[in-house]
Length: 254
Image (cartoon, rainbow, N blue to C red; front, side, top):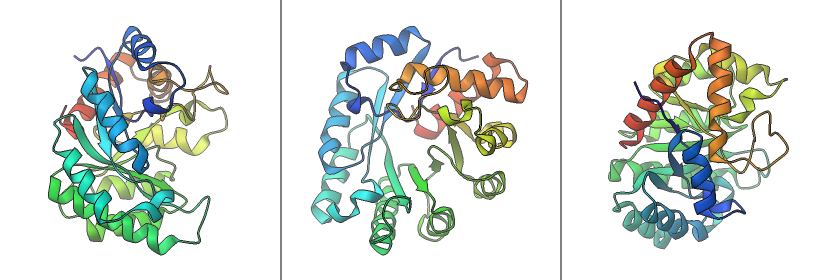
């Protein structure tokens, strides 16, 4: 039985406090491992450097959909080189975001597909950002992805969409939103997602769970996500932690 948690998505490089302080609090809260995604060119080296410096901290390389205009062959080659590092465990976070700006949707799709192909070549899993783009994200994954495992980070879809993702063998990551009083959809997903497909995250410094909502999120707070889901599912917290930790270690090959 695993008695520790894993934060599968934490922007530790964006937190205002020192990495040492963040990780000390994380470890003391029973969170043993965390993964840091990159989102733009300037964070690629940064997340890998942090992962290299600290035990049980791992990195992902990827370009966020809103940064699609910065993607080119040189950046892709840089990511491929960084991915040769054993502390790089996924390509992420990559995907589609139609919430902020729909003016370059086709470019977002093109860059998403290129990074999927890169992940396939590197034999690495894919961590997906999907905001208000469920159908296009799903269709592209089903057509372009040939071999990589897929995780929907900060899942925001319906229960019906979750079931379609699970049918395709995809993993679902839930975070602080599930603790929000009015987050009906997230709570429904938390109750119905097959446990074998579930992992936990914070997305720190964003989407801070209750009781710290309104403050900066931290990897230590992934425990509140676990506690809420265990209550929703009426199952022992220790069992939920054991299952989700095993899932994360298997998915990311930790």
